[in-house]
Image 1: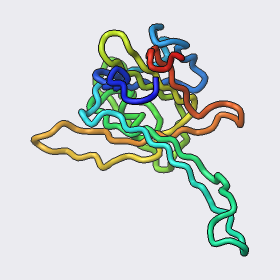
Image 2: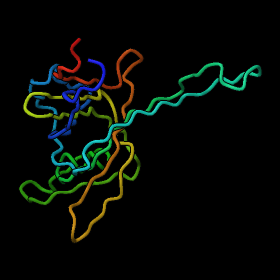
Image 3: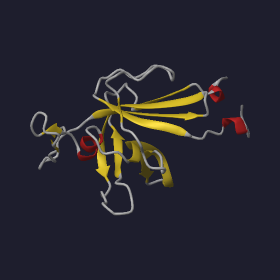
Length: 190
């Protein structure tokens, strides 16, 4: 319904961020369980999740006009930015870019994570889910992407460690979408 409608205002009251290997099936509705290969990355900061879509549009200037004759799309960036609060076998490699946390010797209960000297490709899928109340649920899935930026990791006496990062969507092919929104929100019903 066009115009002002307070029932269409959404608050992402609770949610979560998940990651999975490339090619993992994603839920096809908002009530199905995420398949087992999807790993919940746990707590995030109260800043929540920030989505950003940035298109680069280049003007085509002409000699005959002071304003552009048309625009050409030259670039599209779709990013998701958030900060993780938990440190574990899923979050540390996600933040630093691949490899795995390993036990130094079987049964030692001592674990080691090695940050590679050279960057390595660490493409994954990303899922974001949030609910507004007990009924309306949204799911957002990037089929292919990678962490492209990490924030400074600060160790202090008075605050939790935060793994702040930016995840950037990558095209899978020229016909597939960069990301998909699923929602059971009646605001979209015609």
